Image (cartoon, rainbow, N blue to C red; front, top):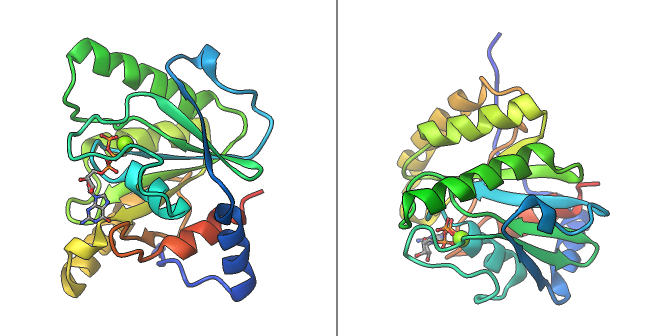
Length: 215
Ligand SMILES: Nc1nc2c(ncn2[C@@H]2O[C@H](COP(=O)(O)OP(=O)(O)OP(=O)(O)O)[C@@H](O)[C@H]2O)c(=O)[nH]1
Ligand SMILES: [Mg+2]
């Protein structure tokens, strides 16, 4: 049977408005966590952004909230070094350290990776993991590893292609098709793929609506 992974269609007006409202208030930084014991109480819906270092996780959170400096983004891979919790009205939005290459000592990177995996597998209220993939590079071995981990833990994830402003039409389509093919092997994958550009704002309203629709 052929499996299809469609792109996300534009949500209806009511969903877009719900998404806009979710991020229209002050999104606050709550805390940065370096150990499982530091996690805030699991008492509300939580979504997180995972992906390789430099893929654009922090930039995407800034784009969602419309606040450029909220999550620290940087050209230096490995910028985000803690599990950072933000509160958008009644939900937690979580920025994660990148996996894969990071400009930090090996022992430090291993410590983050351990924490990251514990968090992804063991957080009861984590409703959806957004797995960010650079539209130019596609899914790499480390992405496959994280997606398999999420399959095993039965945590639903949805792929978000980032930096789509860096690719033109046909190249973007090729990258999207490859990513679809990679997703076919992952039972925990949400079927629709999001195309975003934090730089240009593409896909941001849609992502807000998706997050607002998660219960
Ligand atoms: N052109 C373009 N550049 C982007 C986009 N999103 C992020 N970037 C750039 O990519 C670099 C990395 O962005 P970050 O948001 O810090 O990436 P990250 O995934 O949080 O990285 P780590 O915290 O190191 O894991 C920065 O220089 C951003 O300006 C985008 O949509 N388009
Ligand atoms: Mg970051």
